[in-house]
Amino acid sequence: MIELRSVTKCFGSTVAVRDVSLDVPAGSVVGVLGPNGAGKTTTIRMVCGLIPPTSGRIRVAGHDTVAEGRAARHLIGYLPEASPLPAEMRVDSYLRYRGALFGLHGSRARAAIDRVIDRCDLGAARRRRIGTLSKGYRQRVGLAAALLHEPRVLILDEPTSGLDPAQIAETRSLIRDLAGDRTALIVSHLLPEVRATCDRLVVFAHGEIRADGAPGELARTVAGGHRIVTETRAADEPMVAEAIDAAQLADLSAPESTGDGWVRRTLGASGSDQEQIDAREALARALAARRVIARELRRDEPSLESLYLGIVDRPAVEGDRA
Image (tube, rainbow, N blue to C red; front, side):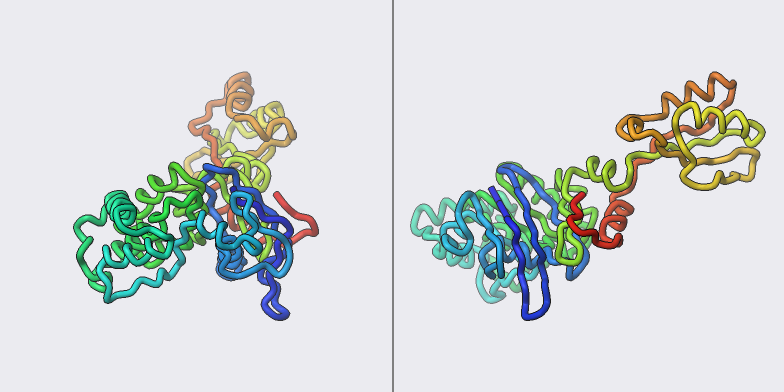
């Protein structure tokens, strides 16, 4: 549905996006992550046809965003970070105006407006002026406008920026519902945003894609898989060390005393074939064979936060794509 091939964007001598290639299949919900200035919004604006790439090619459903810009844009519903809503217009009047831009008039326009007002739960605000609405409701108006022409692609740039916690929860729920039957790109630098709504992550840093995949896949390839946290008696240390070796695990940090005669360890796989499996069973067997009691034995997945920081903060390597 969305295809980028060797896309670069320069503003004068500044390279904002460098040699980005990306495929987004139909029906995907993809979170585009990255710190401010990473190039993610510039990339999205190129996908939407708002600015052309300096080099490379972008297609939306087979339409080139430069050579066939009008056809490509007609397939996209775009909610920018700062949605330019006219404060003096009423909600239904604004939606009627937006519909006309996509060729919706008369009964087709009325049916489309009724549909998006119902979908975005705007019935109570239908006749109100946009300037009198809360930011959460204005965000709903922006979403409704993006959906009017039944786009096949929905692109949302920082959709919960500036909302309070209750409005964020409402907007996330709405986005999950709206993204269910179309291809969606959700641009954010907020990790809870993409965790709650996306099944694939694309991480930008310094104008490049540093990682691309499902959160679990990235945890294995970037963070080295899961870890095992265990607590055993300090008196059993020699036998615990034997059990760790037998389970093909390794201490990832120095053992830490809990102050009550027990020791906490964080362990990781030492064999490459162990990285894809849960090593708790092997460790439990090795400890039991040595009559060692573990009062804690749990799997500790890398957090999205640590994964993100590990990707963004590491130095760039030529040809680096996780």
